[in-house]
Length: 327
Image (cartoon, rainbow, N blue to C red; front, side, top):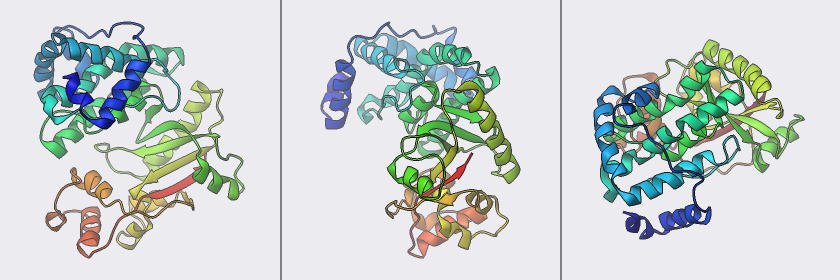
């Protein structure tokens, strides 16, 4: 199995990074077959995936190379718990089949007690911890919507949750981050106290969480202001940033002024200095579930679906937006 990774240039480089980190401090521990369903249910893993994941555990545990990789991936997640900008976990080769698609589910289950201990040490409430880590199950639902099978489309993303960088606070997620040169330059040029290199909160909007109403967003932002001041007092989070197709100003030409998306856009001050490269796949992926769907057949059931699809069918492009506001 590892030979398939070494045959790929990028995956081989990733393996070399894992090996260069040295031996894991401890072997990864997975719940046994009887206890695993409880752990998966706590992480909101869809019920139809529980039995297959329990069965697949035996295959993983019996494979020495898979165990070798599991130990090092778990160590990579938990080694720098709480540090912003941790390690990376790639998509595994198609040849690994279902084990490859689900491998990182086991990595995160094995890392669960580590991140829970970190949360407890920070005094983070149990409900915030539970809802943050339950994003694993939501991402399995995202994978099924896009691919029709179990797995994780972007395994590395869940690492933000399990390394203590990202938290679900109501409708929105907030990621501990650092202002880069472009965004920090934009905030400093506007007279804001924070600039490049200063802490910030990167806000993310999740699927399957209901409408993006102004009231729900305001509650999340208020919670974030209090949450990070209380649980991460060593950092001064004075800035909220967002990098998303939802901030593409073209959306406002298709949607009414009182739409939730347009009102969400108005919270942010646009940041200059970013390139303008089309990212048509992002809105297609987030609105319709699969970035590879043919544009001609995209549904037109809602205003957002009509906006995204009609714009592309007319020959237009969608772009990522970049904005900020003072916390």
